[in-house]
Amino acid sequence: MKIREDFLPVLRPVGGEEEIKSIAETIQSGWWGKGPKVEKFEKEFAGMVGAKYAVAVTSASHGQDLVLKAKGINNVDIINPAISFMTTAVVPLWNNCSSNIVDVRAHDLNICPEDVRRNLKPNTKAIIAVNHAGVPAPINEIREFYSDFILEDCAHSCYTPGAGKNGDVAVWSFQAVKTMPCGDGGMITTNDKELYEKLVPMTWLGITSTYSRLNRGDTLTGKPGYSWDYEVDLLGYKCYMIDIIAAICLEQMKKLASNLKWRRYIQKRYNEALSSYLQIPPWSETCQFYCARVQPEHRDSLIDYLATKKIHTSVHFKPLYLHNIVSNMNKRKYPVIDKEWKRIISLPCHTAMKEEDIDYVIYWVKNYFQRL
Ligand SMILES: *Cc1c(COP(=O)(O)O)cnc(C)c1O
Image (cartoon, rainbow, N blue to C red; front, side):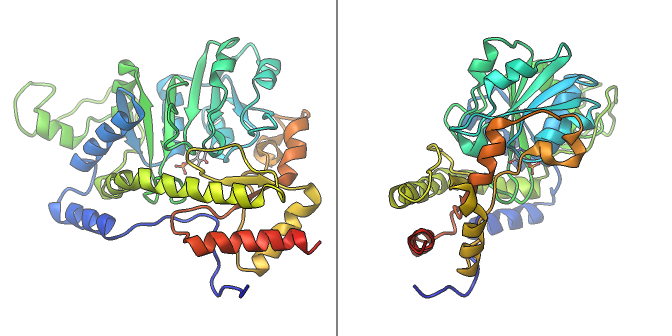
């Protein structure tokens, strides 16, 4: 097969006229900051995932941080999984907590309940559970022996049916290569009204938004119309989503079902064509990553070989306890992930891929093994 000219990326977002029009409308409307589009997006997103409340933020990382701050989780121990993006290991550090990294299960690379149980400390007050590659984390199993706070990291599970309903709070990501991308953005969903009412002003320095004061009258005096005044009595940050970004989110959300259908189709094609060459991943409703496994001696050479054919791959992820920033807190053995992570490779999977791109990847992966 002829080698392509441009690289086939492992992940990439796709947008079109709809997103461009939606951004243009927002620019022309004169309301660029947090306003009607964010409000609409929050409402529709909460509806989609079946949560009572949703707060749109600048990223899932800041969303997770804000949840810990709103819950007053500080200076305690937080358990998080060895296979995840850096966020889950680092957000505990932002809150003076120890980042207690535990092993994962071999079959789906999700947080291992047994290892959580073994590593619980008297001061463990939170667990961050990631739905790795879109496959639900075993939160109900953890619930059998742990009753404190669980933050469900849904960065890969937008949208896996039922995701976001197992933890106490869920945080979603719309970062550029996630399943519903907008560049950078995130969402916190919860059924806890008190937490919701605290989170909203915390996204803007403790201030209630100008847009909400404009539309709902003066909350202090009860007078209708725009109110310039506000009172700040809690420590806030600055991490609310703005309408220019929500304009993209609203359009991406309309396309989500058909985009996910295409991702699952890619997953199915890879599974059918490659199952005798590599270990196929557990089925994912989002296929955020097509995270296959090969023998450790083949992982890096397959990555290099595919690169010579202009195919980008990746590894999701290098175990977090290997990073210096958290390694000294986690000097124990990780028998499962130490073995498995040297076998993982993510093949291209995204909505910009055409049928011939799928054929192309399948052809060269097969070719690598047939050539041996
Ligand atoms: C991408 C990702 C995040 C961070 O999301 P941002 O919106 O980029 O902050 C958190 N957790 C996991 C598992 C991720 O993959």
